[in-house]
Image 1 (cartoon, rainbow, N blue to C red):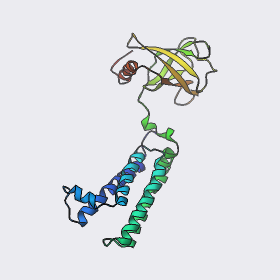
Image 2: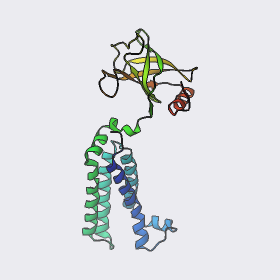
Image 3: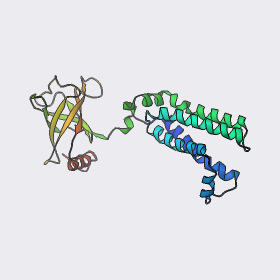
Image 4: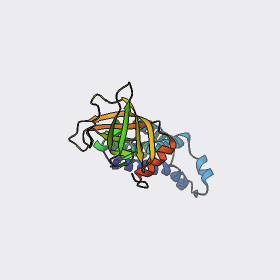
Length: 244
């Protein structure tokens, strides 16, 4: 999934509006202006404040499509129910029917989390492709030195980002990536950008592709322990500020 689910964005906006509506209702009921924030805040109950907090907190989690939003949503609905029940029981401004109806509608709004796109990213954070670092499709010669005394070899990238790269299985030369490399294998890499800047770091194999799809046969690697200056150089290269 290469986009943020619109249902989660919509629900985040709804929660922010609900959180803001709590002090707004107090201001309208007691005829306070927004400049009288202290007076408004003093009239908020602990349950009112809890609803506001969890609305804003849950909105942030949903916008990030965090799996923890599932648990925070349950807490938010429970807190909202307790708040509305208390307001309907002891308050004089709203009836129990009104407060419970509002609570039911609020809970139903969270059905947006059950839509296919939203459910896919909430259940599996790896589907949040919009958070993937920008990649540049470019062929960069790279020297790879596997750990555990395996022979080093030369290959080239298919694309590269700040966090990793995809290495071709077959390069333009005779060298080939060893077929015994597999996910979680540790390697050391070296490559040059802008002609003379050499970047060296360790990396981990994260996937191996047989080819036939979007990517050719090869393997994806994740950079690890890259020096800060090298990260800046690589970022400038990815952004197009530097060439090979």
